[in-house]
Image (cartoon, rainbow, N blue to C red):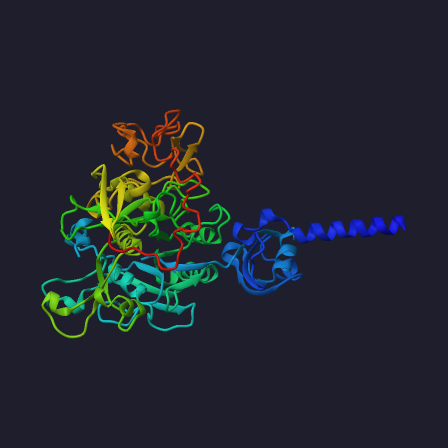
Length: 546
């Protein structure tokens, strides 16, 4: 009886351990007791190539995702726990929902300098991962279309607007008082529809589209990928399946441009995934202020800020115009129906007929400005690499800003500080970028910020792969110029005239911020942090023009 009781006890203990699963392999949003009866998960595995052999014990395989060495599965919570104990499984995440992030902008970034050189991005193809591209006169017919959500055209209206910022030819306004053309009207487009009619998607859908873009790269000369979408960060970019996928595109020679997100009013650390990946170019939004000059432009209060959660990567990398942006309308689309006041009447630019343009706000509108700029650089210099493009844009960015600005919306005041976590390396300047000829010899990864809670200070650290050493790209030049890192850092420049990419860490032992910085008692790290029940991730949040 004693032996039997002991066996029962041991068997019960073993079952308990199996049921608990290996929590280190489960993403934070898969740990808890509130999981649905069935859940779609993305399972990363090792070694590559094993699907049924590794994963045939539990769940239902829905789709192989070789680009991230993973598979999409449907499992129950019990099966999920068993799956986490499989020695060939490395990490498991939900198939998370992804959504789209929501004139004068051409002049604010000095686009006419490119046009004067007859640079329009001709021959370069931009892959647009968005809600589709409508068949309208203002846009070129895509070289290739594929829907990953089973729709045609652009029922949501987001992708057409983004495409117009990149490649719009201004056809519907060419005889009017204003011509609403894009930055690079000579580029080709590949339409990879990942957002549905409500602007929603999922990780697996976006990852599939990224893999398709990579596979079509040589056939259609895809050199740039625009992702005006994102979702909250749940884990390090090293494990995030979206980040792993965009890195594969970058390493394949595609310049990946991602919207930062529209959560800036919630404070710092509001960058979305995959904008948290240090490889990609992450773009925040500026307000052109209804003037052609950029001297009066201000950062949009909704533009998401760094550092990224979990990893502390300094983002965004750069800012570009994204507020009150007029671009191409997808007739009958969801956005046109939800925001009829944003439809631009033809009479406003001296024409008649059906409306052809829509005004939208957000980092979604800023990202394609940078994507188009990348196409211009590639059109002039076909062999340029994604790392060189990123580093040139950051190095040459316009860096003259006020110390702070304030906007009042709905009776609430929002103050923005022009630090590197808000505006990155500065404001996109196409003319300056075209005038630069430096070449990156190392990966141009976004740097990492280290916060020391005991002293309330933050330090700039080496990038994740030691970018800041003697063989790095911009050895004798400062990327951020004399711009201060944060409003409390006084007159001390972020880099100033000191060597940015020297052999020693760019900050050494001197703190980037003092004890009175934003990392003090009222910081996001405290009990009133942004991750409470009123967090920014609600379904109704977007940029509202401020």
